[in-house]
Image 1 (cartoon, rainbow, N blue to C red):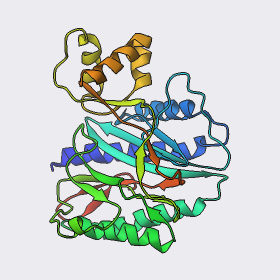
Image 2: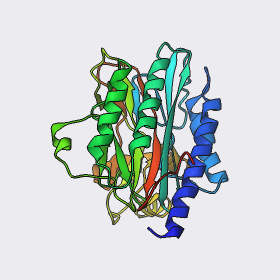
Image 3: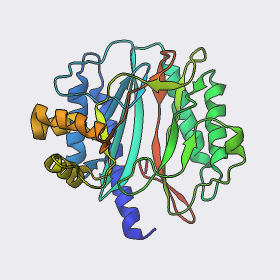
Image 4: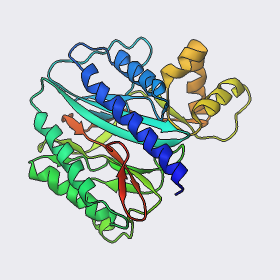
Length: 301
C-alpha cells in the first residue's frame, strides 16, 4: 500500500475517532436518536470526511443496523445500553469504530468485557498473525467475564468503497477457522468488533422487522430509475446509505422508488439485527491497517 493511501486511511480514522468520542456526550436519557445520528453525520462532513455508512444506533437487544428514519421520535431510554457505530471515509478509504454507552443500565460489565476483548485482540494482531488466534483471544476474554460472544456477528475486512470485503474476523473459535490459513495480511485493513451478551442469552442475532439502510448492488439502472440510481451511485457508490438521505433529496417518492429498487434487485436492504433471546448487547470496535512491519490502529492513534 502506497504512503498516500495510508494517509487517507489515517485521516478517515482520525475523523471517525473524533466523532465517536463526541457521540458519548450526545447519548443521554431522552435524547432523540435521529438528532444524535444526524449531528454525528454532520460532524463527519465538518471534519473533512463523508459517512461510510449511516450512523448506527442500537439499543439493548438490538445489536446492529438500526438508523432512524425521518420523523422517528425514538429516544434513549433510561436503563439502556446504547451502541453507536460510526463510519467515515476519505476518497473511499474507510474507518469503522463503535462504542457502547451505559445509560443507567445494570449491564455495564458487558461494555467492560467488549472493550477488554478488543484491547486484547489489538495487542495480539500483527502482520501474518492467523485470524483464528485473534478470534480465540476475543472469545476467551469475553467468557472470562462470564458472558457470551455473539457467534454470528464478525469483524470484517475493509477496502475502498466496500464495508464488508473478503476476510471476516469471527468472535469465536470454530473447527473450520482452526484449519483455515486466513491471516492478517500486509496492505489490508480490518475492522475488529467484539459483540457481547449475557450468559443466559442465546448469543446469536436474527433479522428484525424493517430496514432503513440500503446499498446499491447493480451496476446499471433499470428504466424509470435513472435519476435516483445516478444520485445513489454518485454520492455513495457501493457504500451503505440511509432511507432518510434519499427522502431528503427525493421526498416520499424517493422512498417508494427505493422499495421498488429492492424488488428489482438493484438495491439490497440491511435488516436490523436483534439478539434472538432479546439479551442485551454491547459492542466495541476499532479499525486496523496492516503494513509489512506494524499495525496502525487508525481509529485510536
